[in-house]
Image (cartoon, rainbow, N blue to C red; front, top):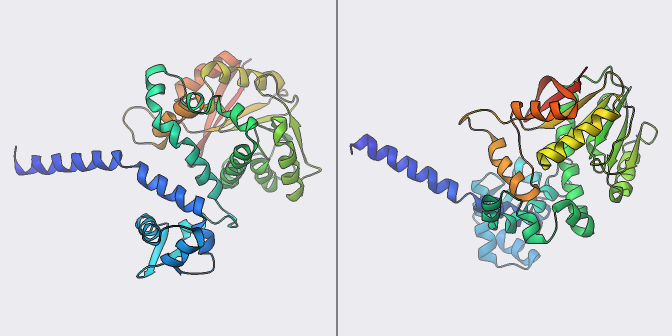
Length: 340
């Protein structure tokens, strides 16, 4: 083996090592969110010893956690042992307008699921029920504290994407949007703020009704948007011209995904459309976040990320056809209309 071959082998080995250790930064940022370190740094730099005392933790261990996350760009060590927030770390604050604190904390719920991932690889079934005793959505409904955290996490994620979607997709001819699986209405609130001539309906399980109505009222949308409780595996509200499904279809295997889409097809007004806001998996070895997220969908939800061809098959079974794909980075809008 020549010198160049040795160099390539070394880089290949280091690449494999980095992949195998990828859990460490994820768990580190989860710990920072669980301890509220960003909230403690909201007013300026503080020492690791001071932060340890405020969180009832070991000073040396807190320093090492902060130093590790400083190397990831979450904190910065201003002087020896003192840390401050970066723009990335600011978003771990609970009170930040673009906070992702709940989103990060919710991810820690999946650590045991990932540890049981071999179950999914052997069976093709999600590991979540094997770990927690029931499928994720039933578990969240039966465990209100975790359900509330999930709803807050989804709301944070939705606020992030609502602005992108409002700019990427033209709703100027849309009269009514139904946000299917719309949670507390944060996503639809963002859309309607940008399209004031459009009205909306948030459709989700009844247990989120109070949170949704509170969110819609605080956004000043009480007269333009309502909440309807129900199960999209059974039906969806009829008569709208746009059915938005943000991150919904990827949570479900093909048969249930087809059921949801068929329900939208049967409910939509003439000329209506379904708008799937999803990752679109590119072909071949092209690096893309969707390919790792697809594995998470298997482990947690039993769903999947899909290629364009796989969406075409779903649409055909649901009485829909693909009309276009609109970029809404980092995701895409897959638009489907009724077949004639």
